[in-house]
Picture 1 (cartoon, rainbow, N blue to C red):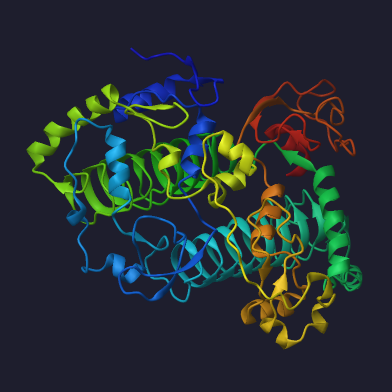
Picture 2: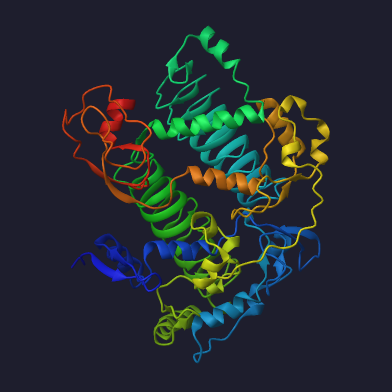
Length: 600
C-alpha cells in the first residue's frame, strides 16, 4: 500500500518538513529509512564535503613534487598528486580495518579516512594544462575554474560545459568568447548576459533568445539591432553602439548599474525551465519529472539534485554526471554509477554505501580510495558470502550503536556523513557560498572554521591605480600583484590579491574590456548574488489583468503593463507555482501562460 505524505521534525534545525509519497516510494526502492534531517539541512551537510575554490600549495606525499590541492597541509591523511594516486605505487587495501562491534561504525570509518591517501584535486579524463582547476573533465587551458566539463581556454568560471574562450561565467554550456554570463547557453562573442540563449554579438541582455547585435535589453525573442529595448536599423544601431565606451572601468560600472535596474524592471518567468515536463526548480532543460532541482539538463525522475546532467532516478545529490541511476545522499556521482548511497565521491561504482573516492568498483561498504574492487568493508577484502552476511549486521549495529556528534545529533543508518567528519572547514566549502555564515555562527552550529592563513603578498598595484581604459594597460601588468578592492573585508573567500595572466590580458583586449578590480573569488560571489537561491516558494502569478499587481512583491520600481489580453482577461491570474523568487523580492514574476503571452 502506498504511504501518504508525513510531517517530520528536523533533528538539526527543529523545523517541520514533509516526506511525501514519492519520497517514501524511492526510499523503499533503495531500501533506506526516511531521513531525520530536513531537505535544506541535508543539502548544507552535503555541501560541507565539497571544497571547490580554496586551493593550497603543498608537496605530494608520495613523490614529493610541488602540487596544488584543495586539501591544506593541516590534514592527518596523505595527499597524492593525480599521477601517484592512480598508479600502482600503493594499495588501498593495505589500510584495511577490522570491524569493531564495540564502537560506532562511523567512528571507524573516520579513522580509515584519516589514513588513506587522497588525491590532490578532482580531475579526471584527459585534462591538459589545467593544474589550477578543480572538478574538471576533458579540459584544456582551464585556469582557476571549477566544475568544468569539456572546456578549453576557460578561466574564473563555474559550472560551464562544452565551452571555450570565456571568462567569469557561471552556469552555462556551449559558450564561446563570452564574459560575465549567468545561466546562459549557446552564446557567442557577448558580454553580460543573464538567462539568455542563442545570442551573438550582444551586450547586457536579460532573458533574451536568438538575438544578435542587441544592447541593454530584456525579454527579446528573435531580434536584431535592439538598443535599450528600442528597435533600430543596422546603421542606427552601429552609430549608437559606438558611443558606448565599456572599455572604461568607470563607464562600465555605470552601465552595470543600469543593467541591474533593467533586470529588476523586466518581466520574469516563474522559473527558467525549457523543454521539460513536470519539473520544479530553476535552470532546467530537457528534463522530465524532476522536482526541486537546480542547474540540470537531460534528467529524469529525480528530486533535490543540483548541478547534474544525463542521469535518472536519484535524490539528494550535489553534482551528478552522466549515466548515474539510483543514487541517493551523495556529494559527487561522477559517471556511470548505479545504486549507490551515502557517498562523498563515486565514479563507475555499483551497489555501494558510505564510500569516498571509490571508482570502478561494486559492493563496497564504508570504503575509501578503492579502485576495481568488490566485496570490501572498511577497505578489507571479503568473499561474496561473507560480505552479504556482514552488511545487514553492520546496518543493525549502526542503529543500535549510532554515531552521535558533538551537538548531540544522532546518526543511525540512513544519514549522510556527519559534518564534523568532513576534511574541510565550513568556510572552505560551497556551503559558505550558498549559506554564508560568520565564524561565530558556524561554530555555534557545530561547524569547524579555518582561520585565514597569513599570506606574504607584496602588492605592487592598488586597484584604484589600475588604468581606467584597457587601451592604456601595458603588457607589464602581468608582472604586477594587484590588490583586491575588497581588501579581505568581505565574507567571500577573498584572496586579498590577484594577477592578470597573459591569456587573460589578451582576452580583455580582444573583448575591449577594462581590467577587474576584484579577485576571482570575490567576482564569483558577485555573480552568486545575481542568481536565485537553491530554494522554492509557493506563489501566485502577479499578472492582475492588464498589468502586474503592485500589492505583491516588495519595492517594485515599476509596474509592468501587459501588451495583449491574457486568458484570464481583466481578472487576476489564478495560476500558482513553485519559484525561486521569494515573495519579498521586487521582480515582477508571471506564470508560464502569462509570460508566454507577453514575451514569446
